[in-house]
Amino acid sequence: MNPSQKPGARRLTHPFALITLLSLAGCAGAPPAPQPEAAPAAATQTAPAAAAKPAPGVLLDRIAAVVNDDVILMSELDKRVDDTERSIRAQNAGATLPPHAVLRKQVLDQMVITRIELQQAAARGIAVSDDAVNQALSRIAARAGVSLEQMPDSLKQQGLDYATFRQDLRDQITIQNLEQQVLNDQLRITEQEIDDQMRADQTNGDSGNQYLLSQILIATPLNPTPDDITAAHKRADDIYQKLKAGADFASTAIASSDDQQALKGGVIGWRKGSELPTLFATVVTQMKPGDFSPPIQSGSGFHIVKLVDIKRSDKKVMVTQTHVRHILIRTSAIMSSDQAKTKLDGIFKQLKDGADFAKLATDDSDDPGSAKQGGDLGWLNPGATVPEFQAEMDKLQPGEMSAPFQSRFGWHVLQVLGRRDVDQTDADLKDKAYQAIFARKSEEVIQHWMSELKDTAFIEYHLDE
Picture 1 (spheres, helix red, strand yellow):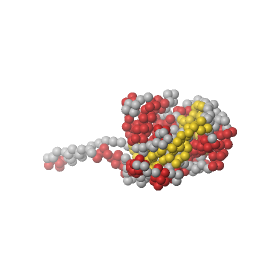
Picture 2 (picture 1 turned 135 degrees about the vertical axis):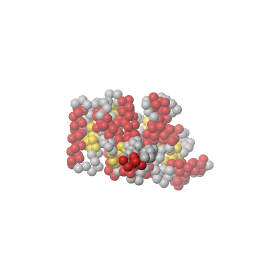
Picture 3 (picture 1 turned 60 degrees about the vertical axis):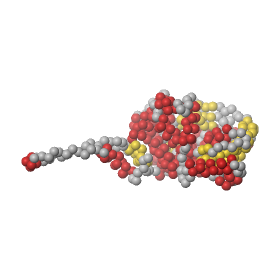
Picture 4 (picture 1 turned 135 degrees about the horizontal axis):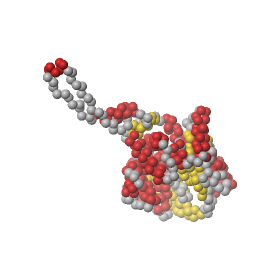
């Protein structure tokens, strides 16, 4: 696919069998019960032999939840709850933690969602290389002011295990790549939508403003009944009344929100005015920092939105565009990351030996849009591609070619053909309109997709056992 952000082990045969095996695991290795010494014949006639007492079993672990053909162990949940409590206190100093049982359920729900998405990613052949994880770790380390080598010690000082942190980061990148594929497959934007957005941008002076938002989501099922909607609305209204009475928004989100960002206090990040979901746009642009909305109904449930902060827009007059072409070998269920890299290494050797880039792109690239153009992606604005692609592109001068590198789409080699500084044109405005619609609709697509996944998954909780 186009690297642009556009539409461009524990396994078991049957979950209940594993539950039984884990429950009995402590007995399997127990020593045999001691046998009584031989008794005289007279004694055996007057008193029965004492029954041997079995050695007590040792409970090694328990199951917190079954997710399709996988399980989440209680030890995993306990550790995740501890890490979450530590993270909440570090990031939300004023937040009040919910009751322990409520937090455990919230954390387990998030772990279930993560497990489902990772299963989907595996089914699609999505894998994240060690190099990609190291690059992400390097960016995190740079923001923290430490080197990659210092990361383990830095995390240890915060009470975090480096190996666990690294695996969590790999899982996060995997899920990002999965959701990007879902958006590429399912999100469609028409020319009419783009034209409408451009007209709205021209008349709406706030479209370039950026809004830092938090939300509390009270979700409804994929196909809710009237009773489901009524119950969710009542729950959302009860929460709204508590907020009006002075309840802390972040603490309430942690305890009550069904959104994936609940454990971060409901913070969903910065959004441009033009990127706000249609449901929120009219409300948010009329709010002041610190304000929160009454419950807003959507197809996903009821949202209570808080405006945390706002940045006023400064219009950008000039932009540096890059003309680039690439060859992509995409990973899939039948093409592993190593296989894709091996194939691209062969293509890269041909390119270094003088082979025609455009012909190889046409013959071998897995990006159907650009392959027909000899791999040409045209003139790209900064930020129009995924970060991995942008970083490689920015290193090169016109005429230079990259070595093979990996992104969420697979393995690429690219060549920069030129650069230019241009005024904002109609094409730039159109691209901004497209990106605004993409950002707005992508949340709706992912939320709907996740609801479908959960509805079709086998999920069984064992917290109360």
